[in-house]
Image (tube, rainbow, N blue to C red; front, side, top):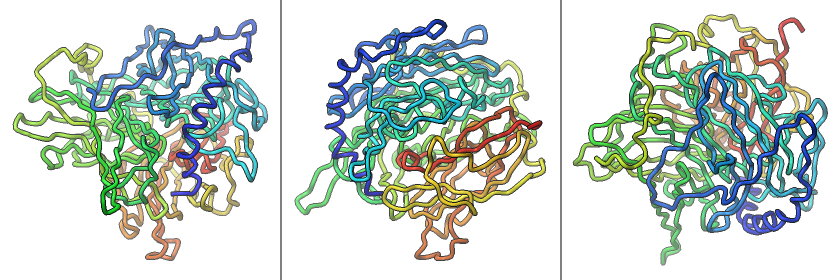
Amino acid sequence: MNGAKKLHFRWRKLFSVVILTLAHACAVFAQTPTSGSPTPVPPVANPCTRFTAGSVVQQPPALFSRNGVLNVRFSYQQTTDSVGRLLHCFMTPDGIQEPTLAVNPGDTLIITVTNNTPMQPFGETFNPPNCGDTTVEFPPGTATNPNPNGIASIGSSVNIHYHGTNVTPQCGGDNVTKTLINSGSTFQYKFTFPTDEPPGLYWYHPHVHGLAERDLLGGATGALVVGGIQNVQPAVQGLRERILVIRDQPQVQGVGESGGNCGNGVPFQDISVNYVPVDSQVTTNADGSLTVTYTPAVLHMETGETQFWRVTNSTADTILDLQVMYDGVPQRIQVVGIDAVPVNSQDGTQPGHLIPVTRFRLPVAGRVEFLVKAPASGVKVAQLVTNNINTGPQGDCDPSRPVFNIALTEERGDGQRTANNRVGSFMGLNTSQRRFGGLSTMPVSTTRTFQFSEVQPTQFFITVVGQPRVLFDNNNPPAVVTTQGSVEKWIVQNIAQENHEFHMHQIHFQVLSQDNFEINGSPQAPAINGQFLDMIEVPFWDNQKNPNVSSAPDVQLLMDFRGMDIGDFVYHCHILSHEDLGMMAIIRVKAKDE
């Protein structure tokens, strides 16, 4: 927990009002498209709608590729919810909010985005080469009057990160360091997925440094699915799938959070599932203690049914520790995929075996896909919950709380039993999606060690050991330079007193080990050793109990640069209040012949 977070609550409603009242005045600054520019997407009426607490979880609407192409048009907009929280969203011209984008390996995705949010003052100019606009609409503030971080940030630039995808980082692709779409501007993404892209759950979200936390707290995230998982793991064929997008948002009452390892305390952020809010309601008791209650969402299952749940932690700041509980008893779930890679699918006999667990630690931005059997009719309380997480003495409050109740129904009128909500039929075992196959047998070209560290309250670093600590800037030179085709071993260590979440753009890594977790008071994440991820949690260092830095928690990862992802991209902590405060760096992958 850092002092800068207190600004979230103080500034939230004030800046929501200021930003929205500027909308009409700033509309005149919209740019006229030049010849050959993509046609702007007009704003949509009534954007960013939300369900009420306790609503039934609905499957997000989906857009499917046809003849190898998915063409999408987005208007990026903002508004406020019923209690004044700032909202952001990507809207299609026909009013669909953050649709699931469904593609196949080898498909081309074309997304045209017009930024229809109010214009804001300019800040830093990006060094060329640039993609889209060149100066970010995010004023830097001053030493005595900084631009607040988080939900109160003042800025309007946007871009899109296609999280987990193994696609080009060049302009028009998954580029976040040089792509800016300012208020009134229109930009077009166009890139092709590899033919060996693993089938699974990816997602998309804004990624402008300094604004990322605010935009995700506003809800501007959606799922992206690469199809064909039933031909890699036949256990899912024909099952009803549930795309479950868990987001977070500022605590509804503006109550200050409890500390790390808070049990049932006041959360740093409230959560929602498929835009059904699960807000915390805080009551002060006569003795001054607090009671926190929730109204869970509701998810329908049929008696005897097995469903395929595809869960993305699309929060800005909230770590999840998921369990399916029937009358207080943890249920065994069968893990099918993690971070869009079917488990045990890249090497060995196929199909790979599923991984049974009774809980799954889901880092910020991570995804997990698993099979769940409906409760028996005699079960009184069936829930998906997230458990309290010890995030460290300076960490956030990620408490125990329900996500949704499971309600048995025989009705077929809940809008969920359409052909598009069922996994396709098994058409034959597909072993061509093994993009990371053979990685563990490759020679390691180099080993690098990285450290997460902080200078509280507002300086957050991820540093190559041996280099000086540097806060992220889009104009920074790359901290790491490597060559396409390389396989590297990275050791990522956390010497801070709160948890951090390591994310690598463009590629996946194989998890070799999770070290020094238990001696620092944190359990190892189940089911991930040996699997291929793009997100992993590194818990806090208990530097009082273990003062030697060699005892700090770390993870050892095998980094796969054998793909065609040549160019500049980033790695960072995906707790976005940390990333926005500097915990990110640039890597450059050079072509083999450079």
